[in-house]
Amino acid sequence: MARLNYLMADVDDQYSARRRPYSFPFPFPFPELSGHGLRLRPWDADSEADVATWLRGFTDPEFQRWNTPIRPVTDADSARESLRSKAVQAADGSSASYCVTDARTGTVLGHIGVNAIHPDLRYARVGYWVLPEARGRRVATRALALAVHWAHTELGMHRLELDHAVGHDASCRIAERCGFRFEGILRGAIFEAGRQDAFRDTHLHARLATDPEPDLSQGSS
Image 1 (cartoon, rainbow, N blue to C red):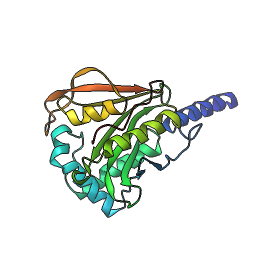
Image 2 (cartoon, rainbow, N blue to C red):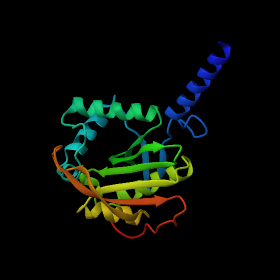
Image 3 (cartoon, rainbow, N blue to C red):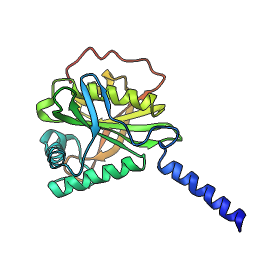
Image 4 (spheres, helix red, strand yellow):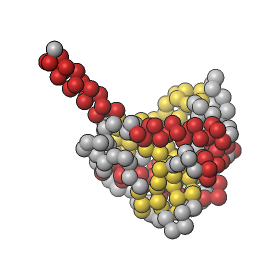
């Protein structure tokens, strides 16, 4: 019986390590990130301001044109629940969701996430959105560059993927500017705008830790 208990304890330890991969050897909880004139901090589901901003981001017409979340965010309650789910994912180490803010003023500019973190394969996916008033200031480019550097170095991720709906040229330019090479088209990979009964294609981009550093000096997105 003692031997069985020992084996079960070992299994439990391995399971816990997979569920919370960054308690060892990576830092946990996920740290705030600063650079390129930005500060990336966790979203706060208990903050009325963060809830309101999250709702505004998800209900922005440009966001809705290119994204259809699995769980719609349509009011303050659903926005708060969405942020709480992001906190749960951060707690188990599977996703890091950051509020993108101006480093000097603290003004919220948008969101960036390092999602679907797979510590064994050293793989993750990234996604972002920017509030209307912050567009044209290279916010997405700067936030993506900051998050990518962190994911490749401190998290030790080897491959980062990014996809966007075909036709979303601005997102395509941001991806390529940040060193995410276009790898092909994924057929029927995401929902059509405003629908969950129809699908559309996406462009798949990826960047490896061994890829050369990109030149971020060009462009305005």
